[in-house]
Length: 302
Image (cartoon, rainbow, N blue to C red; front, side):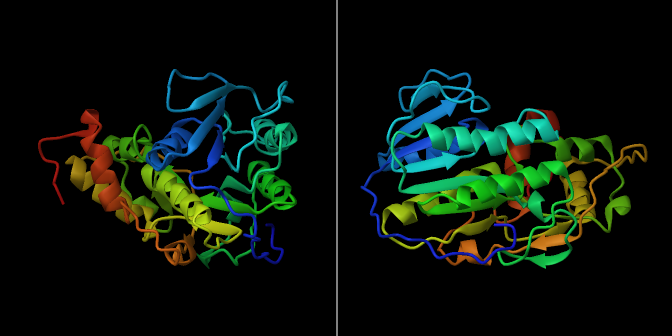
């Protein structure tokens, strides 16, 4: 996926309806994906190091950073949506690159479709309006590891789809809300652009594409998972401060992230996908409503 021409997907291998699905890295996002798929009656397998108790998912305990000791069950679709616990080159290589290789090696039979969750971080310091035809510009060893993972996936002899997600926010992901609560001055963030997607919409779009594939419809080899409105961070922060009733400013709060890229979701929306939270406004209102620590008597409802 690092700039090479995209290949049309071969959909000649039909999936059963419902199908069997393995979710690798069944954590916050993976569990949300399972929740979206469960009503359709799919046979769900979830792989993670520590498995919860749930009768709705067939759990597999494994550490993908090491070769798997047992073959994985035969499934029609595999979702690789794992994430490292620390942000460094070693962890990214072990989890994303070697982890995907270990999973593919352990599959009892080749799947009919592989879905790999990547990140729009692969565009690094690129600027302007970007879409799936834009070449990655990784600016760190971690982003380069994501590109390597995508290459491993794309080399497989079965159909593969990469989904590059923008910054995920939602339940339990409240870092920006915390910054707004601390009083960061929005005027210091005028030149920073942000692209995001609510956790639930990230799960829903994976489920949507998988359902589309199961119905025999064509899917592309690459999608950007991002909501309808790239926005200046100053505008987002100013809006959040208003919702929280924050009037004080703390100049000591520093935002280190710098970005001027704006991401397009036209390809995703062309599949008929509809966002539950099309912009940060709808999404963060839902987050605030579910996090009492950020509620204030002066919070506005719109």
